Image 1 (cartoon, rainbow, N blue to C red):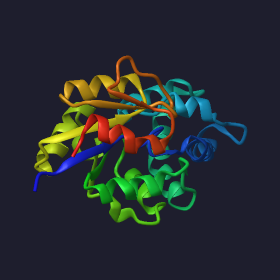
Image 2 (spheres, rainbow, N blue to C red):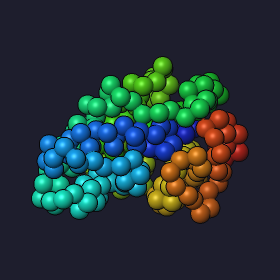
Image 3 (cartoon, rainbow, N blue to C red):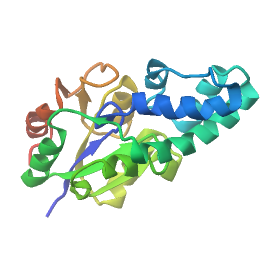
Image 4 (spheres, one colour):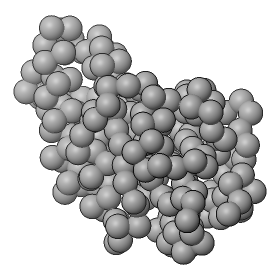
Length: 215
């Protein structure tokens, strides 16, 4: 039987971890820059969806000392995974019930995110039924741009028909490079130019899947 896959971005699409990530980065940064150091939730949100090397350069350049900033960024990414395990991000309304319905309809659910290893696992651990997702891939696994990782995920699972769900213009661009339809998570962190469907809330995924990728 042909697998038809819905491939989800993570940040701004499946959860909002910006407040918690800001807490973890700030806590780690105090070791390098003193007790008054902090990084804000909007500053973290501005980095969501970028590749890890770019995030490291960006946050290091905003630190009081760039050399220390690079060391802080590396440690902050590691500490973030540990911190999120006990302080998970916020899921969106009706998310888990919508995902269950999509699975019951016959869709294969996958995740592909520009994140480090362990981050998707933290998200899955926050779910009541993490097994609802059949698999995942991240930048930490492939070190490829998002469209390359999407193509690898399709190859790994032998999927011929799929679409990608993300919340930013970069997600849209990378999805088109991968040759897939794009569903925009309009409740997330960014905008899109010409999506095949735009979600106002997570529960709209049912209608979007039927329209963009009918079974």
